Image (cartoon, rainbow, N blue to C red; front, side):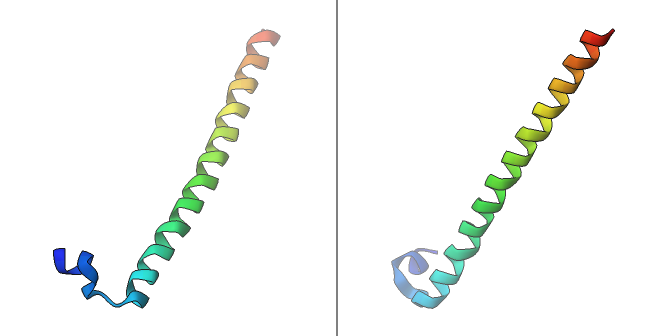
Length: 53
């Protein structure tokens, strides 16, 4: 493991390893945004239902 961090792994391999993680970060970011909107919609819907009753 230490050999890897010291540069035993070729640069191309290291680059390929960072790209997917950045991609996952972007996906997670978008997913969190969607979840936030979804939960906000549910909360506002519940509030509207409570007001109607």
